[in-house]
Amino acid sequence: MAISSRKLRKPCLVSDLLLVATLLASTLQLVAQIPGEMVAAPADSSEKPVLFWQKKGVQIAAAPSLLGVATYATWGERKQIRQLRNRYIPSFRNHYDDYTQYVSGLSVFALNAAGVEGKHTMGRALVSYTFSMAIMGVLVNSIKYTARVPRPSGDERNSFPSGHTANSFMNAAFLNKEYGQYRHPMYGVMGYTLATATAVGRQLNNRHWISDVLAGAGIGILSTQLGYMIADRIYRDKGEHRPLRFDPFPQNKNPSFIDLRLGMAVPLGGDLRGPKDDIPARIGFNMGLEGAWFLSPNIGVGAEYAFTSFPMDDNSLHKQVPKPAISSDMYVQPMGVRYLHIGPFFSVPLTRNWFVTGKLAAGAAAAAKGNIMLKLRDDLVDVFNRQDIPFAKYKPHRAFSWSAGAGIQKRVARNVALKYYTTYFHSRHRFDVESLDTADEQGNISYQWERASKSRFNHLGMGMAVTAFLW
Image 1 (cartoon, rainbow, N blue to C red):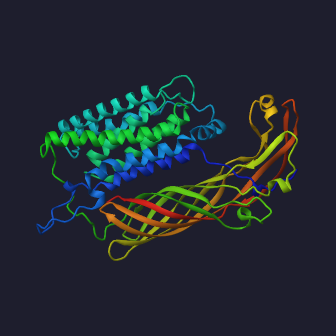
Image 2 (image 1 turned 90 degrees about the vertical axis):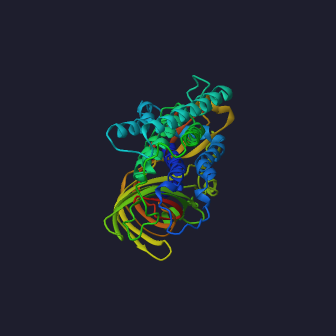
Image 3 (image 1 turned 135 degrees about the vertical axis):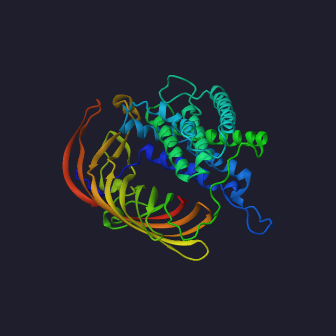
């Protein structure tokens, strides 16, 4: 039976979801802190009110709270998210996460040994780190062996929270405290990127649920915050190096940045939207990570990694596709596509720390394969050893793609800005399509190749972004 390729979509991989979720929370932790020791005292002695993001309690609780909410929100969906991993990379095995969890912490000691001073003396930093490790170990292990949540692999009951992830984010926060807040935000960015890679690895290796790693990330960051708070009470003004920066709001500097964005995706054109009696895409979500190195205050070169997912409106599916006898229902998986682009970025400073931004980038798009699914009758679940089978399968090919975007940005602190973005994405993919040929009540299934065709995935992404300036 002919099924148009524009009707077939699929969900994202768990790594896409987790990468942005943990990086977003980490970047909020990274850029929300505006340490007073990095800012020179104002010329007059009048005391200025403390901004919301500068309050100590907010700095300590911001990222852990966000990750705690994400843990709660994903708890009921964790098995479904794991099914995506089992569907596409069931045999993934790589132990890189056993090592990356330590890299950020070891980097602090290596930099000190090389003579690159951090925010504190090595003795004070070591005391902060010791308290952080102790707090993290107590929190992780007390929860693990109280909650006794089974691992996805089913071999142990100590899955929640992820100790590897907690350790990696504790070390990332340590690196950010000592060097990201003192020398350059890029130290913190690198640390949290490694921590996120560790968290993703714990899921890809089938050792943890998504809720485990989100909770672990929150515990890791919180442990470092509390460890430093204790050390601050012990040392007070001792063991602290002289601030390197004295310009809290740089003027006319090159606005190099890295940001994380999250918003909605509006499908455009006939291939995605389709007629009313088709299976059109509904408004979905868009998320991404992008950054640029500016060669002047106005022009830079950068890259973006973006992901978009569209749920499908399959209300008319039963009208155009007769339901086979083995099925109780039919549904269409969401469609997902990933973009990796490079190109010029633009920034025009306005008054009062407002900026107008823009970009024009090109590269490659990879749409994910997916299916129209048949839900099997209850009496056939044991026969097929599964609850559903594909009715039609599609495999998209990689394609050239480009994007153009604009944004309005407001800097709210020295290294922090909030941005409203709008980006247009364009790509056209060739599809190989197979449809169900035979399926009987003995569990035998066969498919036949149908045809190859092309579909455009043009859409508009709109939402908010958190920007970390790298000056």
